Amino acid sequence: MLLPIVQYGDPVLRKKCRPVTETGAKLDELIANMLETMEDAQGVGLAAPQVGLDLQLAVIDVSHDPECVSYLKVNGKDAELADIMPLAFINPTLEYGEEKDIEMEGCLSIEKIRFEVRRPMDVKATLPQADGSTLVIETDGLLSRALQHEIDHLNGILFTDRLSAVGKVSVKNRLKRLLAENGK
Image (cartoon, rainbow, N blue to C red):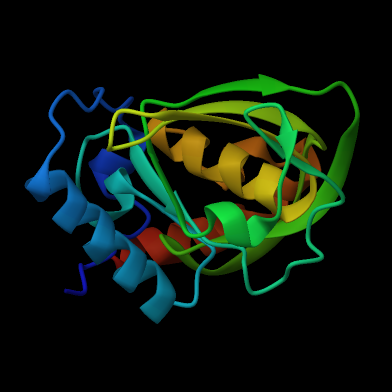
């Protein structure tokens, strides 16, 4: 079932989400619905606050571009994207690498705005799964960026918060227009 994606200005996008404490059929159904919604919107990630829920839950699928990472380790072993995609996780933690790069980002909750964002290139993400297992993923590229972007959502941070000072000035008026369009 497709879920409505909340837009810029909705207060849930600024909440530090609460941990997921209950798993089971309801959570599995929510994950399936979020994956369907993300795919329908042609996104690579979707976090629970983007569908109006104050939960530490997100989904990612970057399998459309198997070359989008230069390395991937899952629980300490080399892996392929196809082994873990689509990815759904709850209550994540993230460790950042030292080197940074700048890439274009957009967001399903901030339509029509894309901008360059500077982020760490590499991450190590500890991603509890709905089935009780845990994946520890070490990677770079689009998967690293998507993990950072979606986990930011779980902490009430939007990609526009990560822009340079010049970038923030550049998008200020466009964000004001979006607020007006979204009735905020």
